[in-house]
Image (cartoon, rainbow, N blue to C red; front, side, top):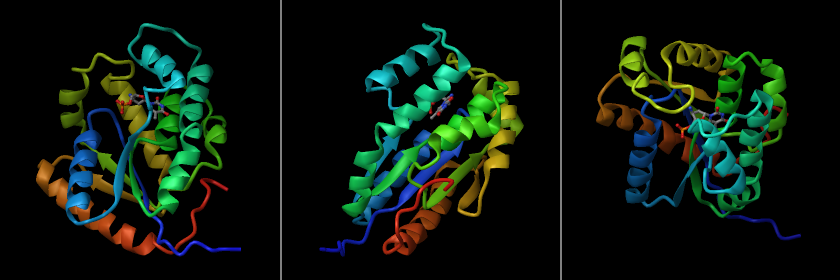
Length: 211
Ligand code: NYM
């Protein structure tokens, strides 16, 4: 049997409440990793471009109502439909920077009152991230940013609840980064964390989440 000797890419996940700056930081990180010569690809969940993603998008934009459990399972299915291509990409040596993952799935659904372990179960077995970067925003800044939103969930009390559930989900491979500072200072901190993670995970096996 031929064993691949290509060092694998890292799975780096960004999590946080709405308006925590994830999208900005993901884009800046991809740009700087590419400038450092890394093979890197940006992904985002929900992926609104698929058939399942279209249903999720309609729900988030309030044009469709769905049962809480149904939408939870759609978010999870939207990750499972990407799993094979994610595996292939990582094994080919490309690092994936992922804007939201299974932890958002649990945090948002459990904040609506669904049982946390029930929420976790459909995502068990997804690829385990090498690092989760959790961007935390202080309440004042969050309230200034969040209530401007038009999508479902963009309300301050709900976001506080989401944040508390994220805190319960943290594991040793998570790293908290304060998102209160300037974009460039936050970026520098993230860049250091991610460069170390890419270096350290090259020869480690890909693991499954929560197994
Ligand atoms: N969201 C995202 C969930 O409720 N469950 C999930 O599994 C994921 C990945 O979708 N308010 C919510 C969190 C956000 C919303 O995400 C859309 P974004 O990053 O604003 O496009």
